[in-house]
Length: 49
Image: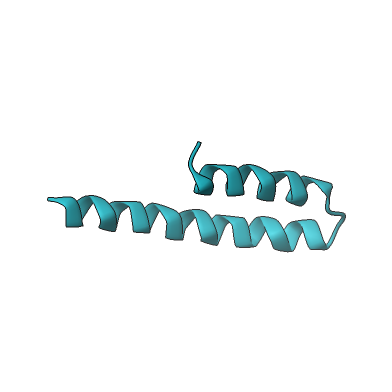
């Protein structure tokens, strides 16, 4: 298991334990973080070529 996978699992567990309004804020940040992660993976793929 890669560190990023482990980190994502832990972050999801913590987010699920939060109460409102903190949970909503954390879920919003999660969407931004996932988008950035996808962009980073795409950049890494392009650089490997």
